[in-house]
Amino acid sequence: MFLLLGLLLGVDGPGGIRYSDTRFTFLIGSLALAIILFDGGLRTRAAQVQGSVKPALLLATAGVIATAALTALAASKLLDLPPLEALLLGTILASTDAAAVFFLLRAGGLHLERRTGATLEIESGANDPVAVFLTIGLTTWIGGTHEGGGWAIAISMVWAMAAGLAIGYFGGRLLVAALNRYNLPSGLHPWLALAGAVALFALTNLIYGSGYLAVYLAGIVVANRPVRARAEVMSVQDAATWFAQLAMFLLLGLLAAPNKLLDVLWPALAVAAFLMFVARPLAVAACLLPFRYRMAEIGFISWVGLRGAVGIFLASIPLLAKLPNAWLYFNVAFVVVLASLIVQGWTLARAAHLFGVAVPRPDPNTRRIQLDLPGQLDYDMVGYRIAAASAILHGAPLPGRVRLVMVAREGRLLLPDETGALKADDYAYFLAPSGRAQRLDWLFAEADDARASETETFGSFTLPGDVPLGELAKFYGLAIPARFANSTAAQLFDERFDEQAQVGDSVALGRAVLVVRSLRDDRVAQVGLRFSGVGERLLSGK
Image 1 (spheres, rainbow, N blue to C red):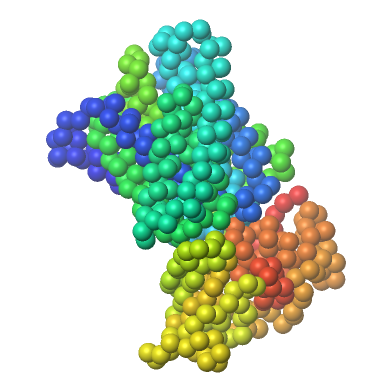
Image 2: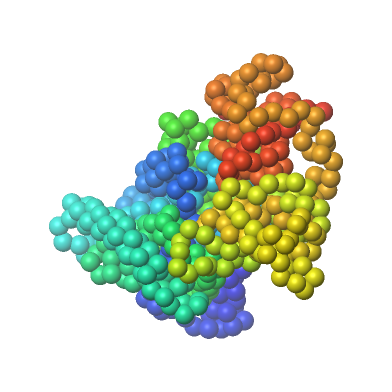
């Protein structure tokens, strides 16, 4: 919408604004992308991405190169470009857009299987620096502005990556220390984090390192260490990321000219189709098959090769260098991005369910109050209004290390020993381990119709979470993939769900369905077993 708004405000639209400042667009786009990547790093928790780092990084490096090379073949034929210029256009279009992926994976309450979601998020955050390396390298090579030829460009790329990794890691540690040490007025910690990220980005660029890699890695470091005011940091960062995305899209839309886009519309759409249906799937399959990803996972990850503002932003680099076909790259990139956002972006949720990688879990309908407690880093205070028929009123236990602090009831404030049993419409406040607050939401959410009948929801059989799936399948005559035979029910839920499994979450296993009945210390303690009447989807895999 903001790309289209930029077009309408531009020189060929009703707005009539004449805007052609590619340098300013590049600077604002660079800053916006740095903020977006820092946000992506902040949302990457090590516990949730274990087992996905290697395949995701391979996809973000070799996968980008393979996608660029394949797209270059199509571009050279469709646009009649020399091989090196076609490779530059392929590189511009090769990376997925971190902003689009991070947003759409969280929009509409979509939850993915743990490995699929982790792979997509790491890849989309890590492939932007690689695409920037390659785009700048090819631009300088084609423009003949780099002394020393190809070897000098390769050495500069290695230095950029090494500097980005070093400054990103140590800068992230410095950010954590600053956030935890300084007693700033309320509300300033998020701005310290954001300003620190921008400073790391600028410093890395000054020594010719990759500022994008540095801010992404710094975000990961901050996300995985105890930090004060984490909830406030994430809230302000979310708003800053939205603003960065919208400003980036608006300026790029202003820079484009619709009459020029029409000149390359059909060949650009053909490039987009080749990229979506041939180049991206082949590159993903080549990178992920050695790690035994299921075909359903590969299919969905291929489809989420979303192009966004990053592709148009990269196309502004040849404009700055004043390469002969620079506007051709920009216009083709613009059309490809629009096609990708419309076709792939609007079908993402449907594709997740079609490929069977969507987790059947609605977001809990609840509101949480979360407070930072200065002086320590281990706990936050969280508060909820107790909804009628919520799980906490029906005997669901609090997770380990969560303690009731006080309850507000009918205008009175009660301490734990005065509270008794919680009641509907109480406001309850708890001490919860930092980073675990979101896992409490389901306890206090409004009950949905699907959980009205316990037998209908959980089934007639209750089993321990450590029940071996192989023995269960043998006893009930269930056909399950061989890779699950040595796993327990609890391990199956851990592997599949992007966050901790919650009461009521389910997994289809042949004609049977396993449903989480209870948790203990953040692990599945009991599962219910029910049998479907019409044969629900079998967990696919080999």
